[in-house]
Image (cartoon, rainbow, N blue to C red; front, side, top):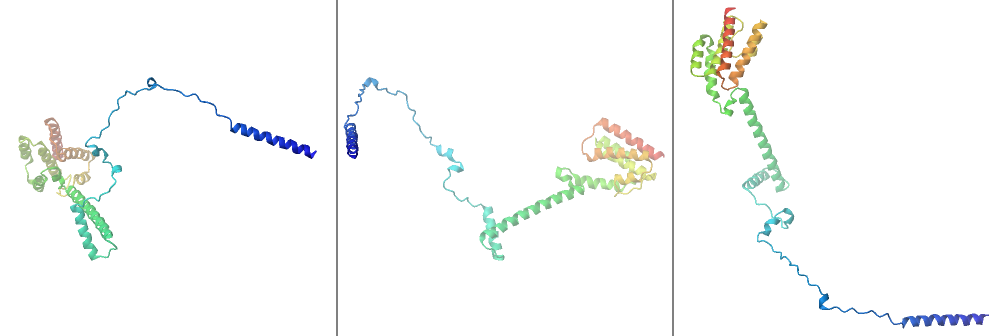
Length: 257
């Protein structure tokens, strides 16, 4: 039995070896060759556009992305001035390095600039509050202030009818309205409605008036006066006549009571 098994194994092995040898020696399949002629060659007749660079092409690449060599900015006179101050402070005080003294100078200059701006604003506000700030807008405020303050000092000695007439003849309606207002204060003081004082304001006089009717009238006339005089605009003839008639009526009322 064992002999028969050995014979069959030998025959099977021989069969496999023959199959491998036959497959190794088998010829590969033939591939038919393809022949091409000149007619089969296609020629590209499209023209190729030649690319050229303009002479100024470098100007198109000035962006920071194209800058490969960073150059230090040139120092200005202001930079040299700051460095000079920094060197002075560096000799006066103890700084860890030159950069620290330079930073100190920059901060110091900024603080000084802010203080100067604040001081200038303070002077402007102070001038406006003191009623001397009209020079900022080109008005000849100094001349007017001196002239009319002299009038107010002598309010009880002035002939307002004559002054108003002269002002109207000269076309100075605003000044005429001011004379009317001072004339009204003179009449009210003479008839003891108020106590005249050059330092008092319109609100002070309004507080002194006892009669509600007179207080209302004085409030309206003060509004007209402030609007016309301090508004600093020319008044036309029609509104001037209406305002003049209102002052004349009030002056007559306060004079007869």
